[in-house]
Length: 126
Length: 126
DNA sequence: CTTGACTCCGTACCATGGTACGGTCGTTAT
DNA sequence: ATAACGACCGTACCATGGTACGGAGTCAAG
Image (cartoon, rainbow over all chains, first blue to last red; front, side, top):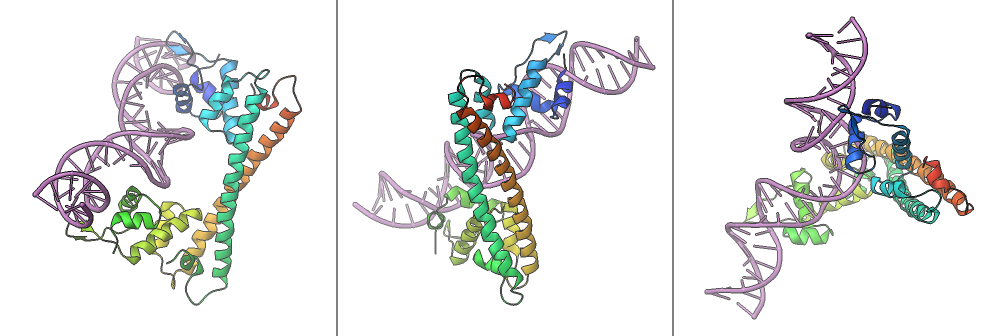
């Protein structure tokens, strides 16, 4: 049985973050046992789930839904969420790659341009 | 000479966005000519710069600095900002790729797992 | 039996990049 | 000349994912 502080350090998050997740409905708010709330393995599991899913790029609202799924009955929905997330990730990756490529191009031009205007600034219209 | 509305639609942004950029110091606030402020080509150029630099992944604070640079004297600093931005972009790209790869892995496992628990949910600890 | 660490709770605040509202005033078309 | 459409301005609000604060209560060690 853990206090909020132990739970937090077990998952390397702040106490306030746990309280934030509780307000968002991602974690339950246990009964108080003499003034203090106690957390168990289920809470630990859920909190670890949240952090792993976040690392996989899910937003908290999506994680909320994932937490409501049943591992043995909701393959379908989990796959849908995963696919949607993968597509969003890929689009974002493409955007960032494009931004990087054009900046790299400009930076390269800039290296070999020591007189005259700066290509980086010029390309943006300055 | 443009009004704020014309300037906004010329750059496909909202009027409120221009006012927001003004508050942030990215755009000047012109003198009023009989109650209404008028914008010129310089404002148009700056606003277009802002949008292009945003597309290249710069944050507004960085754009603020870029706007202060002189194209013919500040190559050095522009290159620095570009390199920093490129590195940040690359790190973010790697993170997103990792998130995508692990999700893709899970989704693939999930496709070929029609009985038993869902690998996606299981991998997160559900 | 007090001190210090921790918990509880509501509420406010942070950054980021905007978006919306409401009242007043200027401009333009009919 | 009056309606309707902007512009002006301060201020509040939005999403996202937290972080901080202050006053009260609780718990364990010395």
